Length: 252
Image (cartoon, rainbow, N blue to C red; front, side, top):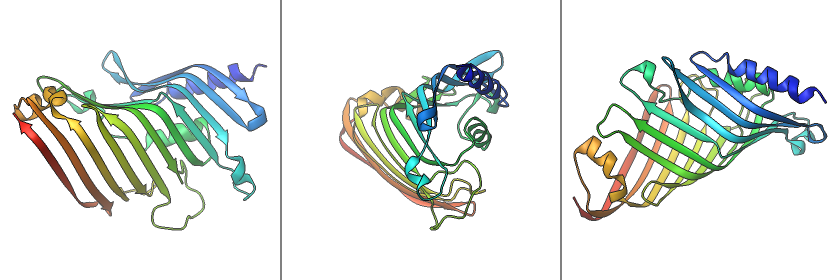
């Protein structure tokens, strides 16, 4: 009966010790029968001077054992995140910015659930990018994010076959009623980025992006739609790929 309170204390203590960040969880449920526990009201906040800015809040995060893998003598986990939000910010200085993910997050995940992640699912998520160095400020986002990741590892383990042990698929609705599809194959524990990415963005209504277009290009769009396809690969500190944008029925 005391276990949820003990786990909640330990998780909150670990989240509050992330360099440059802090975190919290409001409630925890323990599900012993399926080897799982759930975090309710979870959040990671970035410290910006005396301010706290949301970096990764989520309504629910569920960690559980992947029982199917136990038959293969592997102890791995499945993670489900509901209503998770990931916020990236570009500010006037590095201290006021959060534009990437670093290896400190692997340490945090390993501490609060120290089992290799075999599968990650995200439902009804949100991905947001804010640039406060531009005027007007840029605020673009993807809503209703649906994502699945397999082959993830949060700590070194047994060698896995294939160049890219992890695969990630993402779908969502962009600003301007566009449809986003992304596929990423990667080696999560590589010291240098090692991945292959393909991306497609369809049927974006350009007038909905006017705030960002004014900020970056001093352009105001009266009508038009936008599509984009892209592919990129990274290995040994180098990158190669292409980005192809398409504009239709454009008036600006």
